[in-house]
Amino acid sequence: MKRLTELLDSNREWAEKINQEDPAFFETLAQQQAPEYLWIGCSDSRVPANEIVGMLPGELFVHRNVSNLVVHTDMNCLAVIQYAVEVLKVKHIMVVGHYGCGGVAAAIETEPHGLIDNWLRHIRKVYQKHRELLSAWDNSHQQLDRLCELNVIEQACNVCETTVVQQAWANGQDLKVHGWIYGLSDGLINDLEFNAANAESVEEEYKLAINKVEKLRELVQNSEKTQNARSLWDKVRSIFN
Ligand code: CO
Image 1 (cartoon, rainbow, N blue to C red):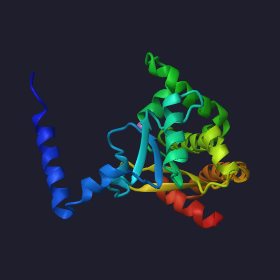
Image 2 (cartoon, rainbow, N blue to C red):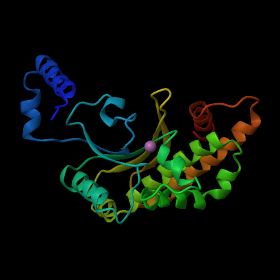
Image 3 (tube, rainbow, N blue to C red):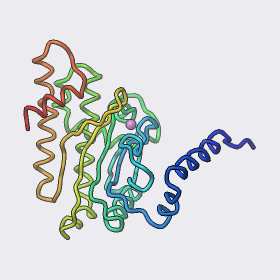
């Protein structure tokens, strides 16, 4: 059988390089991990968690699945959240979606995709919930951008509603939940400004974030040329803040 020589060689080079920069790096890391962040992102190969935020091994606890969903019956995701919150005591959980997400796009297509449609059903629910907001966008590309954003906000809200996060907040633990979206075409993260720091703030944060997505429509209508999601969000931020 052929080994994946290229990848194994490249791993040797990578470890060697880090060793040269910091000979104690791996030894120290092997003793314990103490990341401050839990990243819940999409499995998409173009959204590598650590690289995007310039973090080294040990700095980011990561869970990824198709379209960064947080489903209350998904033991895998819940176990990650529990370990991150109760054992590692991370201070931040960020749900990170990305524009042009294939899973989100597939969720609103009419043709069947087999087993994965059961998973994508959760995004379809988001679509149905915000159908009115989304129908204001006639451009399908922009509609997809908005659904990707709304999906992040809904999933961040789901994180807040898990028993683990609710319990942590009830205990007074320092823990914040954020919603971000990454742009594949420019490598930049767009903060969707969902930042919940306690159980009481979740509803307000949710409403504000949804309001901002709604507001984007006005901005597009009032401008002569179509703008990308980032410049729209920059404007919305300047209006609200
Ligand atoms: Co994706």
